[in-house]
Length: 261
Ligand SMILES: NC(=O)C1=CN([C@@H]2O[C@H](COP(=O)(O)OP(=O)(O)OC[C@H]3O[C@@H](n4cnc5c(N)ncnc54)[C@H](OP(=O)(O)O)[C@@H]3O)[C@@H](O)[C@H]2O)[C@@H](O)CC1
Ligand SMILES: Nc1ncnc2c1ncn2[C@@H]1O[C@H](COP(=O)(O)OP(=O)(O)O)[C@@H](O)[C@H]1O
Image 1 (spheres, rainbow, N blue to C red):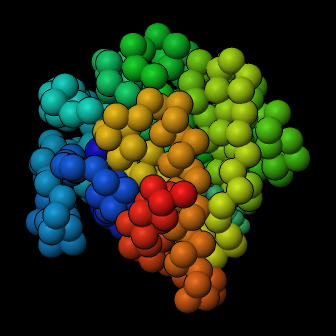
Image 2: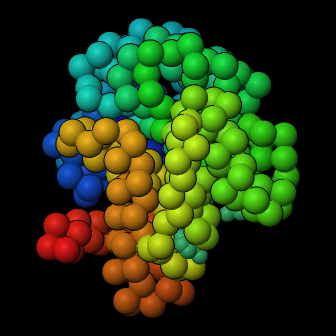
């Protein structure tokens, strides 16, 4: 997992925690060197790896060999939550995606780095799961969030087909689309999940399922459902005031419930 900017340390922590709570054995967070102590204080069970930075906790091209090395030793690489949008960070994301031959999960600013560069997804050896919200999807596709929401299934399908990637278009309901036209509409989840950071948790969940041996195809479908189920369990205490951390904490119960079904 790789993150950067000092403005969004919560996003990285939530993605890493989502991975851990969805069953990942070992999670390593690549983090700008100046933010290392802070992240170590926040996350006891997550391993951290310092990365060279440009400024303000943002990561640039010098970090690429370190991330490539980490990726080579992992089952899956998740990129994006909390990275920030510095120009050099965006270029570094593209270089890592180009170099990667492991399954990828790309979210948030990782998606912003692909605006105008989605051809990379076809060139790389890695099969990518992209998890845009309607704002990110709109930026990638030249649409407004409202236009995306007018035809969620159609837009997700078209994106998956033209990018050669698995597309998880988040929202109510979340749509999972595949390059061959296959499409799933998720049934779990609730409005209490419309709060900052729940999408970051989902990134970790999908990555964790891939790490446990699911194909990217199955991990995208099951991960979205599991994440929504955890949201439904968290909502038993009330949807108002529900927070992303509550969804992450409910993941073990959701996972156990799924195994029983
Ligand atoms: N605790 C932390 O550290 C957290 C840090 N985070 C990190 O913050 C960074 C920036 O990410 P971000 O998603 O906040 O901003 P951005 O990409 O500009 O998107 C906003 C645009 O998209 C639209 N839009 C969004 N959702 C929509 C929807 N459901 N339906 C429709 N439209 C929707 C929205 O539209 P509007 O609401 O304005 O109409 C606006 O246009 C990123 O690194 C992320 O990881 C967050 O994960 C939170 C927790
Ligand atoms: N009404 C709803 N029903 C089901 N799921 C929802 C609802 N509202 C939001 N969600 C889910 O919450 C998550 C929000 O993620 P995202 O938009 O990326 O927010 P953030 O970037 O703040 O984490 C997505 O998985 C989305 O599907």
